[in-house]
Structures are given as structure tokens and as C-alpha cells.
Amino acid sequence: MSEDRVSPAGPDLTRGVPVDSLAEGAMLAGRVGDEPVLLVRAGGELFAVGATCTHYGAPLAEGLVVGGTVRCPWHHARFSLRTGEALCAPALNPVARWEVERRNGMAWATRKRSLADGATCTPGRVAPHDPPASIVIVGAGAAGNAAAEMLRRSGYGGPITMIGAEPDVPYDRPNLSKDYLAGDAQEEWVPLRSRNFYHEHGIALLSGVRVTAVDPTARRVTLDSGPTLDFDRMLIATGADPVPLDVPGAERAHVHYLRSLADCRAIIRAAERAHRAVVIGASFIGLEVAASLRKRGLAVHVVGREARPLERVLGPELGDMIRALHESHGVVFHLGETATVISDSAVTLRGGAVLPADLVVIGVGVRPNLALAERAGLAMDRGVAVSEYLETSVPGIFAAGDIARWPDPHTGGRIRVEHWVVAERQGQVAARNMLAGPHGSHRERFDAAPFFWSRHYDTSVRYVGHAERWDEITVDGDIAARDATVTFRAAGKALAVATVGRDRASLRAEAAIEQSEPAAIDALVPA
Image (cartoon, rainbow, N blue to C red; front, side, top):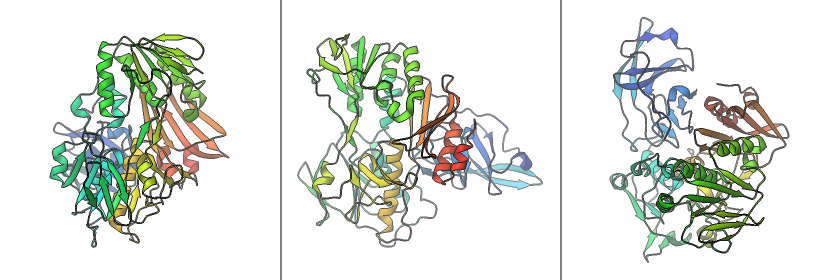
């Protein structure tokens, strides 16, 4: 959210532009009054849509046209050029669209058309003829919220109950370690929707409530408050919990984990009176926390087991870049180290160093919350085993997000990932499949290329695909200058692509992976 917003610029599209000025697949950033508008030529047609992504405000003119969609350059949301609808997370709201008139070799943007936020129908989808009697969603995070919204957008009119263990409405979890923790995002930006939104759309949101049991045969869930709820179809999206650090002193009041909004608020309160912080764990969350605390003026030390931060996921070159970036902002690393004791005022390391600390944040990873699914008797495979349709071993019960392990067509194996955008997209696909029925002709395979981003100060790394292991890394560009495309290959096959400063290349890589076009990945050049 700290990146600059789009301001109206370019030609006034109500006065017309030459049609020949736009090649196939090209975009022209213009305006209608004080609104930024994007004119796009795709499939021989002209479309005019809002030029600003509804997620974080990215300029869509810097994105990519793929088929009948425009994709956001920052976080890869997708919008329909024909309707303006947000087809793919993380954007949940549509962009406006304008009718386009063509005459005598000129094109004008004319009447504006808008879609109501969260109340649209997915193109090509209609309300099911034999809808489920009721749907229960266990988990009010990324996957659960996206599923609830997609059910309504897809025309489902039956009862939806979404049950969340936290007292808050669903919120923008990636922001907790980034702008919100750094003090750059306001509190009101964090909720994905207001509580009134769920009331208006007929979604019963039970906050601060846990499901203690699922009976797949009786189609019933039991809540910790005592009542039971019947369901016809169900989505389990219970997410993950932080891995606790088992060292003396880890339970002290100045020691924090970051997973929930309440956790983040507690860290912010502690940071207001702290001066020296130690972050234990050089994970993505740990390093984003380090950057945010530096933004607040704290001295920050990072302790990590690895020789390079993030090397296991991003490789040595990007790991070195991220370390150098943090060091340039004053962060001190203690790598190849572990904490052995946390006292009221310091953290002692295995090597003997004592790091003064009046704030400690632990970020050594998360563990999928599988207990409920296991007790329900669902098939497990280092996560909840699901089909390509995200259905579990019990028909009518689906799983999505951090807990789901699915067959990935791009790697040929079964994978489980802990990415916000993946969870949202799985929630959307699961919702549509719950409405399609067990043998519905409209069932949809989950075949999106996994995507995540990590932001450190003014630098973002974007990653598409999935490479648990690789035997070759190729670099195009200059990583130190933060202008590079990094490709991860195994047995000659490109499995994943990470980019720095090349947002359009990241979008091209995503499209190439999804379309199984290895030559297109090999041909990636600076956008």
C-alpha cells in the first residue's frame, strides 16, 4: 500500500483516439474526467476499464493482457476486460468499465458501467439448478473469505455460515508484517470487508468461535460454544499456526509471534516503547518484521539457522541480495545461530553472544492446522489430501489454503504451499466446485501457478511457480541492482521464476507456466 497510486494522465478518451494507435494486446492509459481509464485492444475488440487495481491501487497499464483479461503488475489480480469483474484474487472488487464507440477510425469511451462490489456473477456461471441446502466454511482467513464471496457472486442463494476463531472480521494478513506493522497503513485498511458487508450479503459470520468436531456422515459440525450446525457442503480452511520456539524464556511478556491481527497490534504497542529488537528466524515473515521495525526506528538483530536468509526458497543470489538490502538499512545478522535463552533484557545465542533486547519476535515458520480434519477422518498426505477439484476424500467436503495438498499439473507432483494468493484462489475454485456438484460438467480444476510476493523496504520480490528442489539457477540481469529475472530449473524444466524490478516479466512467467510454454519462460526479457 505504500507504493504510489495512479493519477489521471494521458489522453481524454471521451475525445477519441485513433484505433490504429493500439496494436493487438496493447494498452493505452488515459482518462475520463478525473478517473484513470485503460483502453485495451484484445481479440480485435476495444475495451475501456478502470486503470487502477482494486487491491492495492497498482497501475494496470504496467500489467499484461492475457486473453480477455488484464493482470495486475504488483500482485497478479485479474480483471475481465468485458465486464470489469475481478476474476482472480487477490483483488475482490471489480473495476469500472466504459462502453467504447468506434467510428471513422476513431474510438471513444462513452457510458460508464459499474459492477457492485462483491455482488456480481461470474461470467459463464449461473445459479445452480440443484443448489446445496447449506454451506459451512470453517476458517475466516484468505480461503474462507474468498469462498464465501465467490458463492454469492456465482449466484448461490442458500445459507452460508463462515466460522472464524479470531474475533475480527477477515483481514489482509500479508499487511501485518509489511505496511501496517511499519506504520504506513491505517487500521481501517486492514479488514477485507466491514462486518456489515457479510450481513448485507447473507453470510453468517461467526467470529471468535471454533469448530471442535466435524461429523462427515451426519453432515454436522460442533462449535466450542455448544451448538451444532448441519451442512450439505463444507470447506475446511483452518490455516496454519506459528511454530513455537522451545527455549527458556520464550513465554516472557516481551516475546511475540506474528500470525493474527491481535499479534500485530501487540507488537506495535511493544515497539512504541522498545529500542532494541531481536527477530528469531530469517524467514519471509521474520525479515519483513525486521524491515517494519527498522522503519519504526528500532535497532534490529536477526538470528537465523541458515547461512543465507531465504536461500532454501530463493537461492543464494537472491538470498545475498536480501541480506545486503537489510544490512544497508542497519539490520545486523547472526546466521548459523540459534537462541538458547531469552531473558527480560537479552537473547543469548548458542555461540555465546548476548544480544540486548526489549522486544523479541519469533518467526521460525508455521505448521498447518490439521487436527480438525484428522479427527474427521479425512485422508492426509502431509496436509489434507485433495483432488484437482480441491475435494477431500469425503465427497462434498473441500479443503483449501495452508492445509491443502493438491496435484499440481505444472510440477507433476502433489504440493502444499502457504501463500495468501494461493489460498484465496483455492477458496474461489472450491466455491465454484461446491456449486457444480460431484459430477457437474462445470467442475473446475485448480491449476493456477502459485504466486507470492515479499516486500522489504522499497524492494519487492515476486515469485511464480513452485520449486522445492532445483539443480540449476539462471539469472538474467543484475540482482545487486535489483533488476533481474531468476529461473529455477530441475532436469532442464523451468519450475519457478523470481523477479526483482521486472513486474511484467513475472506476469509473463506466470502465464507461460499456466499455459505449459517452457519456451516462453526461456525467452523472458526485461519488460
